[in-house]
Image (tube, one colour):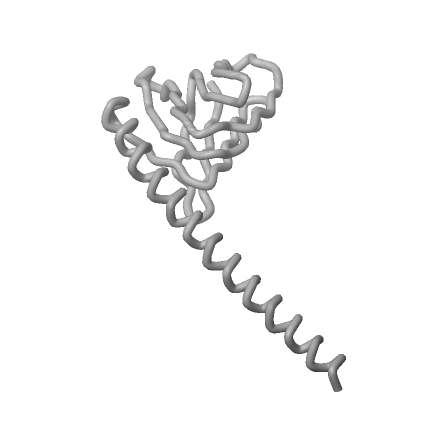
Amino acid sequence: MMHLTVLLPTQVLVDEDAAKVIAEAENGHFCLLPRHVDYVAALVPGILMFLDHEGREQWLAVDEGVLVKCGNEVLVSAVNAVRGEALAGLRDTVASRFRQFDEEQRSARSALARLEAGALRRFIDIEELARGR
């Protein structure tokens, strides 16, 4: 048995034993079992499945993150993740929630870029005034 911990910026989403963990990295899906060698992977947005201590499948939708397996400890750190009962419903949740999160990030980056551009214009104006005197 392994111990799986899934950490988000504001909470611990999962902290329980797991018999198997399946996740997706940039080069495809992989499966971790208790005697698997130590492993590190950069996760891509997708579904993470694990078997709990009773052998039931548990599903998580995980945004980008990092997975580290060291001994019997599996630690996942992700920006965003959602736990769900049914895989089909979880896929819908992932699509809507992560899409909304991406839109909010794009909007914030755009606003920040406008602020930076305005500040640079003002510095240029100040520099030109200083040279003119």
